[in-house]
Image 1 (cartoon, helix red, strand yellow):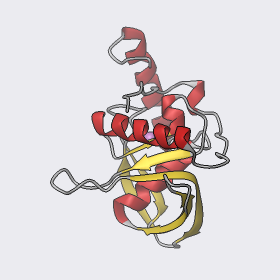
Image 2: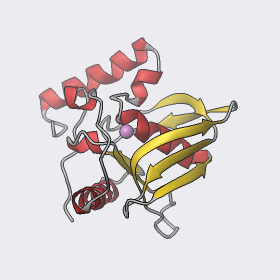
Image 3: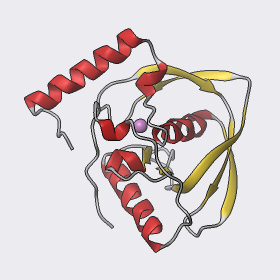
Length: 174
Ligand code: NI
């Protein structure tokens, strides 16, 4: 496994749509493992392939608390198949927008269909932080960041600060 560099916004690679994988082969499975290792090292609870510069529909999440056993999920071609009418607001962050947070409103519960690391079709129902995390990571596959869900004023403020931090070299550009 390998820890991959995480791309920090603003960056056009975070705005590009990703292509489905034809199947989860050894190469995709290795990408999933590398992404998990990268996510744990960051540390974070979710990571999408475009954040490491790979434009494939692959995400990894693990919303286990620090005192709980790891619960890694590796998902290829994830699709939302159902969402609740009930919504919930969550203070979201992102490894590609380090140190910035904003309240985002999303459906409280979701059902997601995907291919697992063995290329097996699966479905998962989620609520709470896992529902938030799955929706946040799936957004990345369409070039959508959590700041795209908040006001332009707040979005521009965060992106301006990140641009400045990159210029000052206080954040790694990649
Ligand atoms: Ni993110």
